[in-house]
Image (cartoon, rainbow, N blue to C red; front, side, top):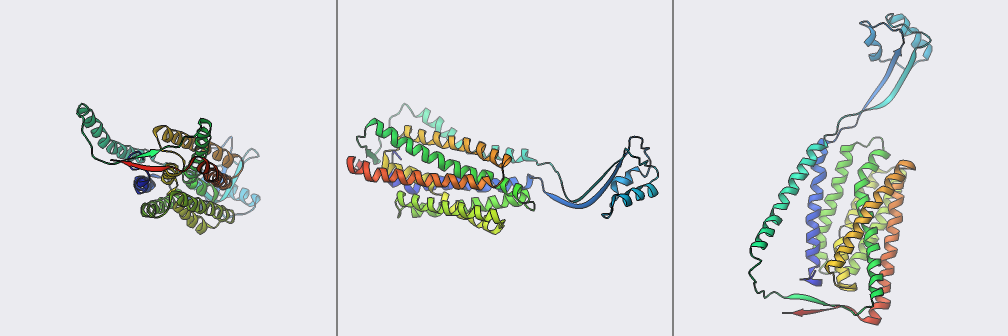
Length: 361
């Protein structure tokens, strides 16, 4: 942002597009290591006695599959056919029928090893750049590139703090909605719907990331023709409609609706983070290191606090609170964004003037 200013809109979208490529591949190589959800229809009859005598037919009782009958018929059947098991008044008869889930082990270790290997490979170029910069730090090279300097407005300190706090609240709510949706999407689907397996939920997550990556690729070109303010307004509106429709689909149990509006949400959220930096550079103040740090910290706070809230509500109240919480937060996000822009347009710009670019060779 310091070098290109408002001209770096497409580059910001390109940077975040590369992030979406990595996010798309993660669920794909994780899926093979997840435990499958196997349902088996069975009726088990278990007879337990304090004075039972082990015999060759003792294991037959626990493996016998019986049709559903009354407890008296089952008791007579066990006494006549399995004499080795002494069924008395202390016996415990357990009949379990229906769908039972067989638990299997999820081998996530290998998925984390793959992720760690990718991170290690990605860090090598930065290590090389750091070493080269240290070796050439003593030499001063003249550059002829054109840097864009931003002409900051002479705003009072209190007003700067107010706007910065407003922006931090915006990014905190955005990060809470963005990270929580994709982080808990798989958990919500598996917990809420009995026929949803972990593998199928992982593929739905991959569909989300594929839509997210494609949308960010398109945003690289759209950002050249649409101002950051309009792009953000459009994306936030799409996010609000998508989450509202997603919640309605979850309430009625329509899986197709959930998948479709997960894709719509991915399209809406894809450009919000990079466009927010461009909007700040164009409408509020220059994106300095301090500003970027405040934005990152506030986004991190939202990403840390919101999962705790959602997990508590899903565990103690209902899984549907995953949807309710996100709808409330996207509503608050739209309100914060709208009020911030109205304050900037109606007060700051009229009193202190808009930001301008000055190119210095």
